[in-house]
Amino acid sequence: MRAYELRNESGKTVLAMTERPRPAPAADEVLVRMRAASLNFRDLLIGRAPRNAPLIPLCDGAGEVVETGAAVRSIKAGDRVAGTYFQDWLSGPLTANAFRTVLGQTVDGVLAEYVALKEHGVVRVPGHLSFEEAAALPCAGLTAWQALVTQGRIKPGDTVVVMGTGGVSIFALQFALMSGARVIATTGSESKEQRLKSLGAGAVINYKSTPDWEKQVLELTGGAGADHVVEVGGAGTLPRSLRALRHGGFVSLIGVLGGAGEKFSPGNIIMKGARLRGIFVGSRDMFEEMNRAIELNAMRPVVDRVFQFEEAAPALAFVESGAHFGKVCIRI
Image (cartoon, rainbow, N blue to C red; front, side, top):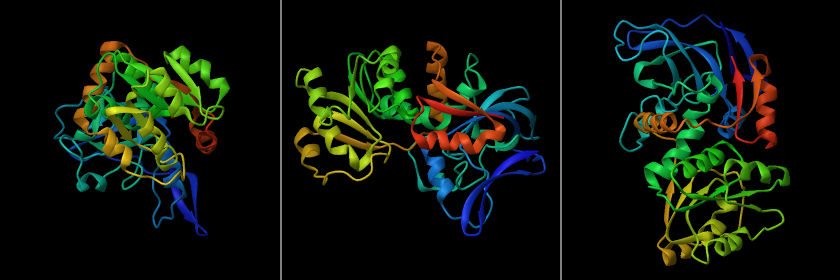
């Protein structure tokens, strides 16, 4: 079978296509014929890291089960499934043990024609989704779901701030609207402002022309501030997010895309009684809950562009450019 590997060549990590034997599933595994994969910013970071052994990259993928091990009972051949980001985080709180089996990081990922995964490491995907749409769910989709629903406990009438047009932010916009909330989106691209509005954003703030965007959030909320901020910028934007937040509001800390920012002080957290929580994808139980909501609401993930299997390197470069709106996928 064809697969991609991250390899160390002359001290540098490179992405190369290779031929590998088709895996045979163990008794508790299923063999998935991968049909699509999607890319995340974390894949760029992993791709730059030095490594001692080849690794199949990417954590997000969907396909159909073609073979099951002798002990498998809950999954059958023909099922359309996606792998879980944490292969062994099934339910409950996140523990250090979950990081031992992260697809495309500590164990082989999904950028291959066939992948063998544990029975409990796959979930069925909503039937109305294409494989590319389903491949967008495991990391970005579930991160946004945990941020707003599992931890944020979003409710109708809430105001949610989302940042930019990456996968997590667009999923957060969709889940917020699905929950009856109002969305204020930020972007640095004039060309993306109308696309955000067409998806349902009630207001869009261009952070390049309005660098103090938190002031406009306060104006748009009558001085009260937002109920939720889905924070993907990290140190570069966290102080502004806290200033944009209402008293008792919730900040989901997800990304580090914004680089260095102003000196951080915990004063706003204390004075506002803000809730600040780190969000790291989610468990299998959360994934299945999210899928039920997506199916019930016939929601479709936003896929910007689909590359062919032979175009993995250009696909990664496109994500790195930041030009995408929603998810970037690879058809396998």
